[in-house]
Amino acid sequence: MEYRELGRTGWKVPVLGQGTWGIGGFYSKDESKDAEAIEAIRLGIELGMAFIDTAEAYGGGHSEEVVGKAIADTKAEVFVATKVSPEHLSYESVIRSAKASLRRLNVKTIDLYQVHWPNPRIPIRETMRAMERLVKDGLVRFIGVSNFSVSELEEAMASLAREEIVSNQVEYSLLERGIERDMIPFCERERITVIAYSPLARGKLSEPDKHLSKDEADALRKLAEKYRKTPSQIALNWVIRRPIAVAIPKAARVEHVRENAGSADWSMSPEDYELLCRVFSRRL
Image 1 (cartoon, rainbow, N blue to C red):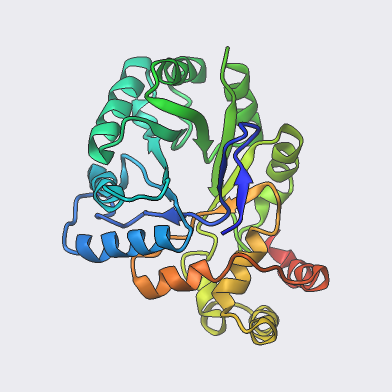
Image 2 (image 1 turned 90 degrees about the vertical axis):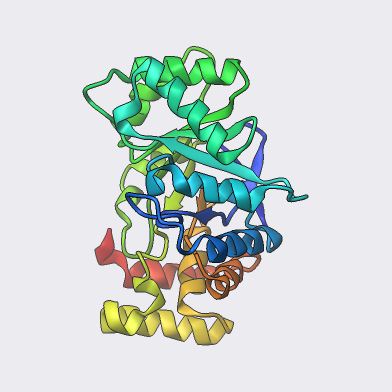
């Protein structure tokens, strides 16, 4: 598995990680598929996708518990990221949320702690002050944000006294390319990692004939045949082609984990990459 530097930290993470939205439940706890999810996460780690992203909001916190069980006793070095919810961005709430996430994950340090969504009712300076306290106390290694605009990201960066924002987790796929207008150029200049969530557009890119226009579906299928890959693997490889980006596709089943892993460690030609950019240009 290829690794890339996270921001300008010197710390490297896999270009493909594992998202966990829906694992352990969506908006409330659901234990019915825990065993299958744990198996999938562990397989992903074995295949090199040892970057796990979760959030306190997923499954009412149960997603973090599932991740904690999946990474327990593993010999691999796993990079664990989680997120604090927008209603918990006051100073004391951030501290409490981080400590609760640490307990559920059963880890001593959260590798990447992210603000899940901005909250205009709580000053970002207050939130970042709490984030820096967590880093100082050794409870968090790096600070990130999620779903921030360029202006919100700039404000968060300016609010930090000692640390840096190392990443912004945003939606990015062949079907959702809006961040190419301003966010990607900004992150490239500032050396901030773009963590792409929903890189398969919530499954739409896995079934191109059902969800895409004819020219889009044809392009994906022709490249899949050329490279002996699936449409999903072509779409994921396109996302991680950008040096500033890593992707966190969610897979709760082992067959999907194996498929996702096959998206890395190879590159389509520059001509084929540009072909996809042109065919999917209306998604900008």
